[in-house]
Image (cartoon, rainbow, N blue to C red):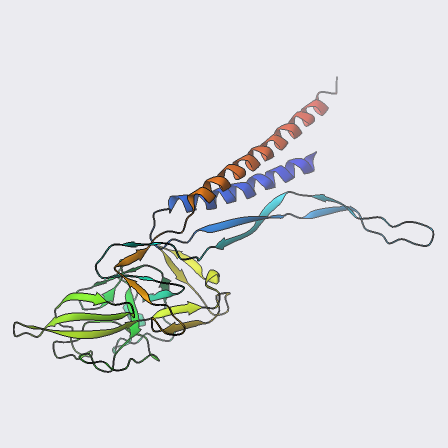
Length: 305
C-alpha cells in the first residue's frame, strides 16, 4: 500500500518532467533554429522480497519476487533533424544539412590578428542571422563574432587558409586585414559561404572585397552537444559529441548554405499534442493511485473503535 503510494509519487514526478519538456517544445514552435527534445521513462529501483533460486534434483526452482518503486527519467534527447527554412532575404544563411556556425562572444578569445585562441569559449549555432558591427566584424544577432577562413587576397582570392579560424571582418580600403576596417555596403554571402562587401575607397567609389568563407563545424554525434540557451550549443573535452571538424561549405565534410534563409523550429505540433494527452492521462492515473491508497489507509485507521 505504501509502496503503491511511493510508486505513484515517483510517477507524478517523472510525468511532470515530461510535461516540462513538452511545454518547452511547444513554447519554441516559432523559435528559429530550435531543436525539439524527447523524454523517455525508465523503471525506478526494486526491492527484492525473495531471490531467484535454481532447481535441484528434488525441488523446482523459483523466480525472484520484486516490488518496483515507480518510474523516473530515462533520457532527454535532442532531435537534430534539420527543419524547413524560411526566406527572410538579407545577410542571412541556413545550413542545407548537418553542421553549425562557429561564433565566439568575447574579444579576449581572439588574438590581435583575429585568430581564434586554442582554448576559446566557442558556441555553435544553426542560425545564420549575420550583420556587420561598428568595427567591421561579421557578428550574429547577439553580437558574437563569426569565424571562418581568411582568403590569401581580399581582391582576387584563390585559396583560403583552412587550418586557422579567424573572425571575419571588413578589410581596410586598400584590402589589408591587419588595418582598420573600411566603411562597407552591400554585404553578401553565397552558398559556398563566401562573404563579400563593397568597401569605400575614400575617393568616392567602392571596391568589392572578399572577407573570407564562413566555417561549418560538424560533429560525430551532434546530439551530444549541450544546449546553452539562445539557440546556442557548447561542447567540452571528453563529452559525447565527439571531435569537431571545421570545414568550408560545399566541401566533402560540410553542406552548402541557403542564402537569405533562416532555419525554423523542428517542433512537430501534432506529435507534441499527442504526447501531451498521453502524459496527462499517465499523470491522472498516478494521482488515482494516491487517492486509492489514501482511502485504504483511512479505512484501516477507522477500524479501531
